[in-house]
Length: 176
Figure 1 (cartoon, rainbow, N blue to C red):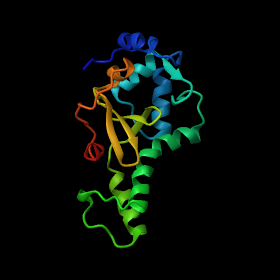
Figure 2 (figure 1 turned 90 degrees about the horizontal axis):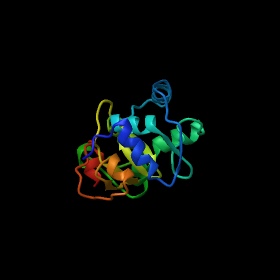
Figure 3 (figure 1 turned 180 degrees about the vertical axis):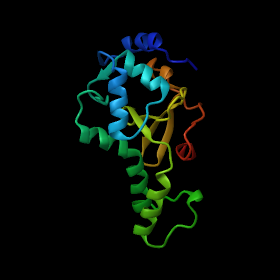
Figure 4 (figure 1 turned 90 degrees about the vertical axis):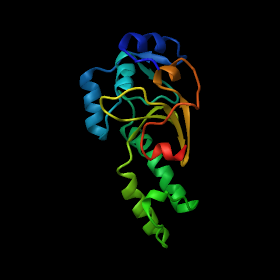
């Protein structure tokens, strides 16, 4: 696992086929976190300070449509709620599933409020938004189909794919 510093992040970003804009400033990063109610993990912040990938699939944290960004932040939870409603998904730690689907969705939504916020990296690849932490695996999230995509953000940027890393984000690791 590589500790992602600004220099390492800049080097890894050069390898991407995406266009790379100037990195976000601390003021911009703080404003994004305040606006959308989450925090970037330390390595995610380092990457975004080093350069801002943009184009298809990459969240445009600087000039993107605020509604689209908010939607991308909601997708993991909304995907789980979809599976609760349509596919009868139920996490065992939530207790007994209510008989009525609407009640089940309400309980699931309440339980999911305590799950770590997932922050989009690219497409449906996410990192948990945990302040002051780094080294989380990049996870691919499609409803309740969650897999480890890369050991950490550095490995993801190097193009290394791995399903072997331990997911650190509570609830989401249970779906692996």
